[in-house]
Amino acid sequence: MKLKEKMIDLIKRNRISSTEVADALGKSGVLDDINILAPGQFKVGEVQYIYGHDESNWPIHEQAQDIKEECVLYVDMFDCDNKAAFGDLVAKYLVLYKRAEAVVVNGLMRDNHTLYKERYPIWCKGVTPLGCFNKKVTLKDDTRILMEANRKKFHGGILVCDDTGCTLIRPDQVTEAFYKKLEFIEIQ
Image (cartoon, rainbow, N blue to C red):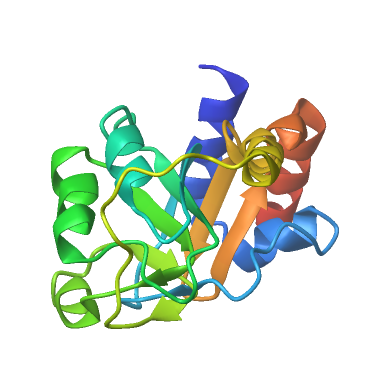
């Protein structure tokens, strides 16, 4: 078993919380203002990174076709002017058909009544009835720079998501030394 798989297994089997992971990371790694939509869930997995931008979720639809099963999908949103990344139809596609372990959106969601009723494992910055447009857009250079930096930070890392929020173990933190910290925090 690879180290990353071992780490995910340890966290999952022992339900090591986002709080405990943040403690093991020296009080860091927490994603600001990201909260669960349907409480009572605990999810952990390898991060796959996708993004939307310029008030469009078209790029999300394109990238979502290639996500891996059991990933924690991190959806980054740029320049979306308080519009939701997507709603219940895309959430259903991601969770039921693409089999994402969880979806974490650095932005807003819509159709919360359905997302809550279906208990989709979604964490986000909040809800709104107003959604992004589904139109093809061109990625601007300044957005590309931000996206590439965030992809490097998230993609291939591990996200631990529970009622308290989400904590990121960056790819460069997936080490034997950190694995031992997680074992130690569990023993306490």
